[in-house]
Structure formats: structure tokens, C-alpha cells
Amino acid sequence: MKPTKWYRLVGCGSATASVIALLASPAAASPTQQDVDLALHRPYQVSTSVVDDVYHASETANFPDDGTKLTDGVIGPASWSSDGPWVGYLRQDQHSVTIDLGQTGTLHKLDAWFLQDTASGIYFPRQVQFSVSSDGKHWSRVGTASPSIPISQKGIFTEPLTVDHLNVAARYVRYTFYDDVFVFLSEAEAFGLPGVQPGAQRPRPNPMPPMHDVGYPKAASKQVAGRRAEVLIPSGYYASDPELGVWHANELLPYVAYLNQKQEIRGRMFDSFLFTPFDTGPSGGSYGTGSATQADWKYFADQLFQPDLQLGALDAAVAQTDAALHQRNWKAKVVIGIPLPGLISNWGEGLDFNPDHVGQAQSLANREAAVRWYISYVKQKFASAGYKHLQLSGFYWQNESVDLQWTPNDERLIRDTGRFVHALGSYTFDWIPYNEATGFRDWQWMQFDTALMQPNYAFTTGATVQRLESTAQLAKHYGLGIEMEMHWDITRTDSLGDWARQNYADYLNAAYQYHYQNSFLAWYQNTTTLLDCENSSTPAIRHVYDETYDFIHGNYHPQENPGTSG
Image (cartoon, rainbow, N blue to C red; front, side):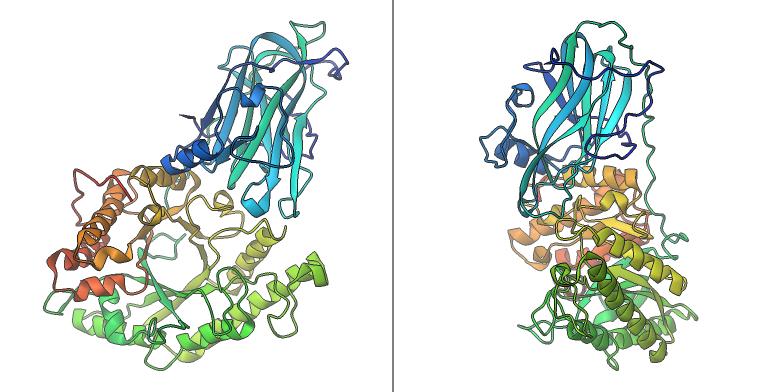
């Protein structure tokens, strides 16, 4: 599959899209009974804006294209299998299908047939852009189309996305769409008549200029509220080990300060601390997938403000570091996670989030009310705590994707939450989506100040360092940062530990290779991985802590021969 440049899809329409003005021509002709599918049995090429080895291997192994399926005349049914007529495209940002009609024809209508089964992670593309060309090099956009069936509608559906009422002479046609998860396409059609018919217009090239890279978020910039290096600190309820995620000052000190092997403070480590809950609360409900109740939310918030623990322990660790370094008025920045309000009926305070009970509008209003209550509660608790060495810097959206498959209102919920956070003062609204998660391109529209993409290189079977490259390409292009990830095996002393340490080194090396070493970064370290490295008497394990400090301060020396597998 070929990579291609990024072009922004423009326009938005119904299932039968409005035509973008590309021709100064008479009224376009309507399809006639004589029209034939000029794309039938014609060759085509598929390209992507970014290639990911793992995603590409998955799509080609499970839903392959033999090079003929998209123009074989077979429109797929409302069902799918690995050997059926549907071709699956998995993430990799944007796909384009380009068909060579073999000779110039007069086009009246273009179709692309898609399948949706959101329960299986197969979504209609939100929009398809149709373009034509006389020479395969210079392109004219003739329209866009969006599906009439929302992603949140349950069931399996097929639908042609269409642009019609054309009267344009061209040899090449192109269909371009973004992938949220899987996109299934069975047929691309181009209806018209052979040759240049009377009245047909030649396309005037109106190429969409390539989108320029937005760039990574700069460390210490206003956008990121002056932050440079953030570490995720999980805490709260953990049923099988109540002490896990209970942080004391001596345990947080190695994250605030750099400790040499004599346990002497010799510098600062992280300047920002993101406190997130473990997956479930005391009720068993999930903070990340939305089944946690108000009591769970309150439990997480309250435990952050225990005397001498959690935030109190961080305050003490910063005070100790300030004293050792003879510095005053330095404050660590704190970001607090916001649980996802799912579509549950029993959240609390009489708020029902289930749209089947209260309707979509009231469901959204109730979910927004819950989020606003929580943010205000945390803000008030932080102000009352009177920390001398901490600054509440912002809030973090806990869910790592946008759940379009459950409700049409999740993007609006996030957007309204961002507006509420910003209205409260100089707080950031942050997000760390998993690799190519739904919504990652739209992070700014959803009012996030920063979004850092997870490469998931450390946790994806079969991933190579190419994953770090593709993640960097997407992040730089859309203005995201990168999450640095440590596998929990990094503290082992066997071959798995060797692998995990090399894997982490690959992250550090990639930052220099793709030039984001000076951007705002966040570190995922499971629960206490970096603390365990600092405490280790094994040189290779202790070295992980030391090289992280060196990296944060620009003193890391990249390896010349990075690893190859994740």
C-alpha cells in the first residue's frame, strides 16, 4: 500500500452530497438509462497518508483485497466475513482509492459502497471526497458525501455514498476517506458513458493544497501552561491490593527530584503530575468506560486530598526538593483525571444518563451536569487544601477515545467540558488518546489544549520501531504530542527485562530521530515502574531512571542501532 500526502477533506453534505464548484459549465446532466459503470473491472490503486505495519498486516490478513474486489461489480450484503466481498481498511489515517477507467469517459455519478457494524468496530467514514482527473496527476474535486445513518445507530447497514448530477469528462476517479477504526468498502462505481459526450466539461484542476504539519506542542509554552515533562501517577481504589496507588512523600520524591545512588537530591525530575484513577471504583464500575457512579468519582477525588498522602505527599516532596536545591517559589503542576460519564441509569443525584430513558438531549445535559459537579468539587477541595508547593494546572479527559458508537453526543460532551474548564480560569484541558483513537484529529475542535498520542509500541504484539515513526508523523501533522511508555517488565532481570529496556530506549531514540525531544511529553509508567528503577541495585535497571533524567534535561545520547520489535 502506497503512502500519500495529506489533503484535507472539505465540505460536508448529506448522503447525496452537494457538488463543489469546479466547473464553469451549463447545468450538469442527470444519469440516463444508457449509463454504464465505467469503473467495472478496471484496475485501481489504494494509498494511505501514513503506513502502519501492524494495522496493514491485520487488514490484509483478515479482509484482503485481491486487486479486483472494488471494481468487480459485486455490492456486498449487510453481513461480512474474511472471504467476502468487503475489503477492510484499518486506521492509518486516510485512504484513497484511485481507478484508471482506461479511457476518457463522461461521468454522471460516482458511488462508493460501505458497510457499518459498530459493535465490531466497523464504521462508515464520516465523509468521502470524490475527485476526477484527465491525466492522473492534476485533480478536481467534484463533491463530498456523508452517510445518512449515524455511527451510534445499532445494527449492520450498507449504504452508497454518492455524488451525482455530474457532466464531466475524465479518465481517472478517486475516492478519499478517513478511517476511525475499520472502514469496509465493497465497490467503487463511476456511472457515465464512454468518450466525451456533447456538453461534457473537462475538469479544471483545483487541487487541495497539502496540509502543513502543525508541529508538536513545545515544552514550556503557553499552550501547555509552561509544562515540560509530565508523569502519570495512578491512585485510588485497587481491590486486590489496597496499598497500591497509595503514595507517600518518599515514594514521590524520586519523581520530583533526581536522586543519585546515594539518595542525594541532585536536580529536578518531572515538573507536572497527572493523577488518574485505576480502572474501577469501589462499586466495581469503570472510570474509563463510564460505569463508575458518583460515589466512585467522589472516592477518587477525596482520596487525593488525604493528609500526608497523594497530593499532600507530593507537596511535601516538592518542599524537600526546594530546600535541597536552595530554590524558592517553585511549584509542581498538578492535573486531575475526569472519569467518563457513561450511559448508565444510576450514577447518583437522581441523574440518569441513559438516553433510552430520558432521550439524547437530557442524557447529554445530565452527563454535563455530573462532569461540572466533579470539576467544581475537585477545584474547591484543592483550594481548601492550601498546598504551598502545588499548582492545579488542569484537568484530563480519562477516556482514551471518543465513543461515537454509543451516542452521537460524546464529541459535544467533551467540547462543552473543555469550555467549562476554560471558563473557570487558566486551566488546561488535556487528553492522551491511544494510537489513532477515534477523534484524535479533532482534538482542538473538542477544546483540548493538549493531546498526546500513545504509540502503544511497548504493548502491541508484532510492533516494530516503525510504529514510533508513524505515530510521530501523525502527531506532528495534527499538532499532538507523544506519550513515552514503559513496559512493566523493564524491572525484570531476565531476557524479558532486556527486551523491555531496549523497547524503552527505542522511545527515547525516536524522540531525537523525529525531533520531538524538546516538545511537551508525558510518561506512562504503569504504577511504580520508574520508582522501582530508582530503587534497583541492578545497574541496567537503575540506568533506566538515570537516562530518563538525562533525557528530560537534554543530556541523553541516542543509540545508533535501535531495536526492532515491540
